[in-house]
Image 1 (cartoon, rainbow, N blue to C red):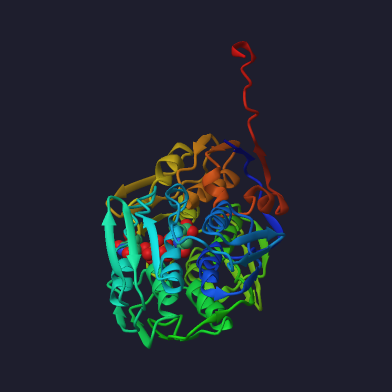
Image 2: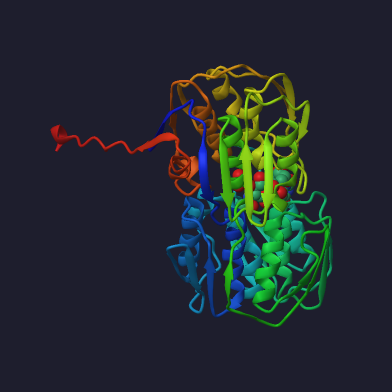
Length: 427
Ligand code: EPZ
C-alpha cells in the first residue's frame, strides 16, 4: 500500500490546472451505454474509480479505453446486463448503471452496493424512481433484478434531492415512452453535465440545475464526443490547501460559479479570493479567522465533499467554528487523525466544534476515505515537521496523483510504494 510523506510548513504557490470531474465522468460513462454507437469523452482524469467503471463496462461487453485523458466506449457488442458483484463492491457508483442498462436492455442485475466509510449509502430512492417508471424489482439476498419491457414516462418526486437517484432516473427515463417530470431533483453541476451529454446524444431534457427536470422520451440515442466539466471538489481542495498553508495559488480551468458557497466561507475566514473567466486566485496572509457556523447541504449550499478539508483550515483558525454535517452520518472519521496532529475538535452527534490552534504537528496518520484522506494531506502540508499518510489508495480514487498537484505548487511531498517482501526461505 502506497504512502505519502510530507514535509510541512511551506506556503503553496504557483498555478495549477484543474482536471475533469470524477462525479460527472462516472454517470456519463454509464450513460454511454444508452447510445447506439461510439462515445468519446475528453478531460477524463486517471483515477481508480474511473478504472473500475471502465472494467465494469468491459465485463458487460463494451470495448472501453482510456488514452491520455480521453475515454472511448463502444457498446455495439454488449452481451450482459449483469453488473459483477466484485466490481460493485469496489465502487458504489456502479449503481449508475441501473438506469441505462434497464432503459436499453430491458433488464439489469445488480447487488446492493452496501455502505462505506462515510455512511449507509441507501439506494431506496433509486429503486422507487425506477419502479415508478414501470420497472419490476426482485430481491434475492443482496442481488436485485430489475426488469421492464417498456419504461413509461411519469411524475417522480424524490423525498431527498439525491444526486445518484436524480442521475439514474434521468438515464432510465431518456428512452421511456412519454414524458417524465422529476421533482425535488438534485441541482449539482454534474447533473447539468449529464443533461448536456444526453442531449448531445439526441435526448430531450430540460431543467437540470433546478429542482424540476423534464425528460421527453426518445426512440434512440447516437454516439457523440463530449468534454467533462472541471472537478469542483478538487478545485475546492486546492483552494483550502492554499489558505491553510498561507500561500498564494492560481487555479486554471476552474469554474468559480460551482464553488460559490466555499468562496463566501473562505472570504469570511479572511482569505482573499479573486475570480475571472476560468481562473480562481487564492491568497492568505496571516492566520485565518474562525467561521462560527457551517452546515453541509445539497448544492448550491456548502458541499459535504469539502467538509473534512475545510475542517483543517478551521483547526488552524483564530477562534471556535462549528461544522454541521447533514448529508452523511459517518463523515467525521478524519477528526481523530487531525486530533493526533494537534487539532482541538469535539464531535457531538452531527456537529464538530473546532477550537483553532496556532499550529499542528506532523505524525503518521491513516486515510479512512477519499475526502478524509485529502484533508490529511492538507493537514500535513500546513503542519510543522513530517507527516506520513497511509492507505493512500482512498485518495487515488478521486485525485489524479495528488502528490504531483501539490509538488507543482512547491510542496515537499513524495509517494512511497513499498517493495513486496519476497520470501525465498520458503521457496
Ligand atoms: C454523490 O453520491 C457523490 N458521488 C458523492 O461524492 C457526494 O458526496 C454526494 O453525491 C452528495 O453530494 C458521486 O457522484 C459518484 P446522494 P450519492 O444520493 O449519489 C441518502 C465523493 O467524495 N440516500 O446525494 O451516493 C444517502 O444515504 C463522493 O466524491 C438515500 O437515503 O449521494 C446520503 O445520506 C462521496 N437513499 C444522502 O442521501 C437513496 O436512494 C446523499 O446521497 C440515495 C441516497
